[in-house]
Image 1 (cartoon, helix red, strand yellow):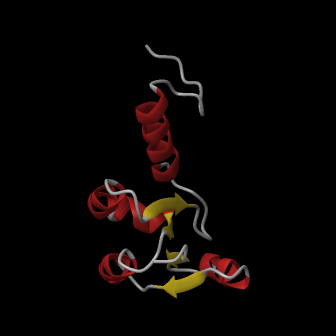
Image 2 (cartoon, helix red, strand yellow):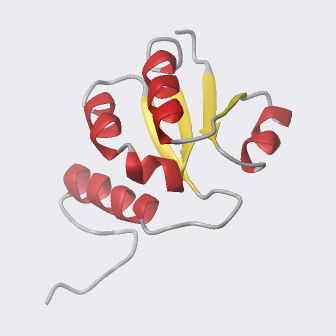
Length: 108
């Protein structure tokens, strides 16, 4: 695990990362994504995964992210972004800093 970076996705969104030197893994469905993520977690330090798949793999991503490496980051897919990536980023920042500095939502 020498600083390698990968992306998992089910659309053309992964191809642009491949041009940037990131190892790209295209998957057909959630079960294939789950198996791929488990394998890649043993070999990579940073794993990007498209938002649509990440939301369905939240349990596995949470478990993986409880360790220092790898870091699994949800990104928008080629069909746009759901709310999952924003919610997770907010949770992680609030946990680290104790406040929401990213989206500045007022507490009610």
